[in-house]
Length: 173
Image: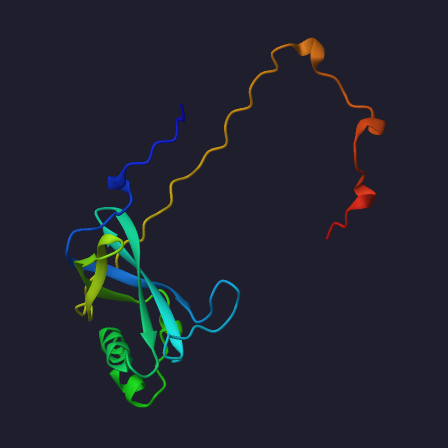
């Protein structure tokens, strides 16, 4: 019998609807193979990944933007970042705002294939003078303590002829 058990409850993880402090975490214009992103209609596309902060934790949520049919949504993102003028001059690009803060209004929507999932309902400007979200500090991973050798008699120095490679096999820089 397998020890690997998957619960259907763990297949989807949604966060409660509401407004979250967030920042732009990453902006992608290419897929995993390095090819430019395009919509099914052939429009240039950008994927913006946001990190949302809540109760000392964080989660990531993405939004795709197309250059033409979703320009209205990109305009809302620019406004939430205080860059309406840059947008009007056709100079706004989310790539230039990685790490910048805003508020995301998140809702839960039902997807026919995947069930419930979070979706960005609106982008909002952070109020002037409000503190930046506190980034979540990754937990420090400590290396396991070395185990003592069970039988000291079996521990020995290796003969150089037993080593299957030599330093000459590799280039060190």
